[in-house]
Image (tube, rainbow over all chains, first blue to last red; front, side):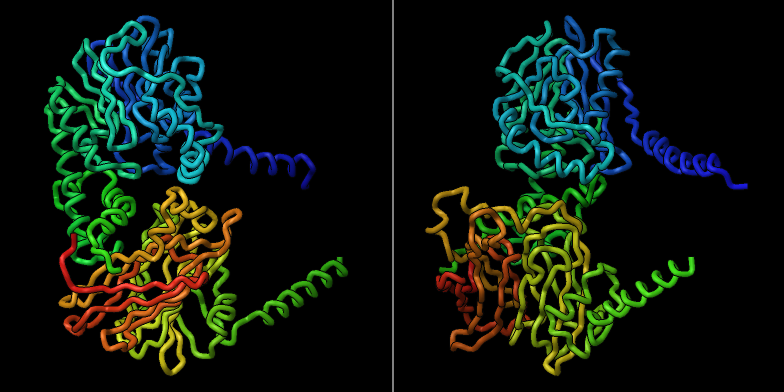
Length: 313
Length: 261
């Protein structure tokens, strides 16, 4: 006999079961890897944002300070920030003491919300860009990542970091105010370990992204970073580089990209035709290709084409 | 119980009847299943008798629109003879009609950019001189907002000086022509900015022969950019660009073979 209780049972199962499933799917599995004394890195996927990776595509660095861990970049979402906070507490009971944002792209600062009671430092132009672009980034991140983004609100950095020698929570860094990947890109050299945390100025075995790029300034920044000759380098995306290969690789890709787009404009190619370009083997194997090349055509080709084509009136 | 069934049945019949009233004369099976095609077939193409989806009409765009204000599209209907015009449209968006291309002496192939308002099927409907229609489609995903955002031009205060400025050139050997016209292409959908668009662009030979022409609508991107294709080696002289916007501004330019910068 079919009773009311049966009906409730069926209803209940129907509602609760998929929800538990959905929650199980949206858990970030963050594993800190020690890369130097008192320094850990969480290595992101080298893929593009997806419902599978929840936007965990970015590298995060945790560095021992006097009163807790200094966090460099905070990830793509509230939930990611919460996972980071719990990773930090396992490494140091006091948790995170300060946050540095290398630049204003959403995968690097949307975890700030969790650390809103701590100092959050960035370059001044990063702070203003996070304020002006944050909501538009959030719209797009919710579209790309769906429920992974639940509850995420844009919390821009709160303090402007000075350049040169700085002390944050008792630890000495050299703060390098650079740019080119975005309007303002901060690279940080940890004095104690000689580790250069390059943010998205350097990508390694993962295609560089160009939505806010100025290629000429970016190349100049790469020269400055290379001159540091750091013992090891943490790129914004991709594995730690101990062989000084990541900067030349990023430079080679950006040079190839610009050369390819200029040549295409000179030959009169249309954007869709440019997207058909076969990537050279050394770049085809990078993470997130050919999607990033296609995105770069959209970002850069209209401007390059206007420079290359002569006036017709 | 019986009464309910009767009501349900009559609703179903009524719905079917209403649907039939909106049906186009030639009902097609839309490969994109977008739900809007029947409507556009009637409203945009004038409900033609002879029409079909045809893989020879190739519509190529990115899978996802990286910049919703500048979505590239390449339409290639060179597999079809005697093309009179190509109507390019978006199924979903406040203004479906993007542009109409009359290839005249050019090949039935066009590169363009447009503003997208949401993920949508994009169509190229090709009419031949004998009145038959052939339709090609693609789907482009988008975050949207492209049609309702103000033009970038107004971020600078010199947009009036650049209005109508043309960049471009010819490549006679490969039969290509590329043209970019500086224009805000205001859709009228952004707050307090009336419609301000280029309405037509024609391409003429030195002797004044019409080689190709375009009718533009609001969704064409700010600073419209087109690739035209001719049979390689047939472009003998420069191409004269002549156009007009809805405020009566004349657009005049010359595309010549020559060095790029």
